[in-house]
Length: 479
Image (tube, rainbow, N blue to C red; front, side):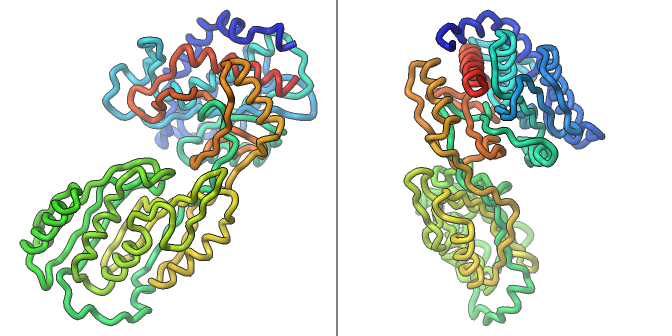
């Protein structure tokens, strides 16, 4: 039967309506807003408005609606025991500055819809809604239910899906239109960890005092988020065996020799050292330059007080240019998902308070969390650090031979004429919220990813093409 339906042609008949509805959806500023949180709007007014908008489009098409206290909602049609789930989100990250058109105007410029959320994830959300509408309008016979699930908190803490699945049934299988084509079938485990040495734990070691220190480290700070490589680091030193001038001179010489960027200045009888790095996403830390660990590498050229000596020694041995956990003993290479990665995203040190590292570790399914975290804990004990788990998401993988994967591959190939390879990633998509879930589009191979950037956009042509792909996918999975 699919041979008689030209999915792209059917989508093009509805193109004007698809574009107008997508633009109206993008004009809603659906950013997390603590100021306007209330019952039924747990993430604020704008997100609630966007959720209502998406749900209303579905309701007008004849789908059955259910709202889960504003945390999430779903729209459903079809009949049967099994559910095909399509999971997307209506919230967006803040717009930031420097746009060439207003971020919520959703203007079409050079064949692109430009707006915050255009590619992540409101454009694709509307593509999925219109794909489902198309299947409904064609009156195609289905043996399963199709359920569009809308989350509201994907860009911050995923409370939406946690709350949703507390009360709602898990789809048999499904996909999220919030990543890349052809198809992402596997995602690494994701952990955010704090490695903390309290001043009590430090003192309990009873280390001997440093015999001759060039300086005392008063404080150290680098990085803002565990999943980003720090692009700025700062150390505040109190001169001891060396003068202000000597410390500044040594740092300047080090910058010259190493080719790094930074500066030093005297401040209130102390010396402030600033190091510059290059920030990238924590899933591939080797592509960036970690300002924090690079600055620590300089500090190791000085004689420091005994606590600073232990902190910098630990960091330099185990975290300096260690993107895969080699020296700390947790390196693991996986043919399918790639290597375990370690990103030291935040470094903090207070001479009289806590000394800590906040790290983001992503690991493939062929090594268990227990295996590598045990080794990590042993290393931490060397310097009286404790391990705190901030967040842990286990690896997610769908068997490449599963009908979900093979069906979506076939649909992609039929619609594009291109081979549908499958991808494993270090990031996290909503696909992992489903027991059997993958990420499927909307970004076509070779297209630049503008998500979270100024002038975020989706090409009109790609929005239409993705809608046609999703329509055939929904039908093939649910028929």
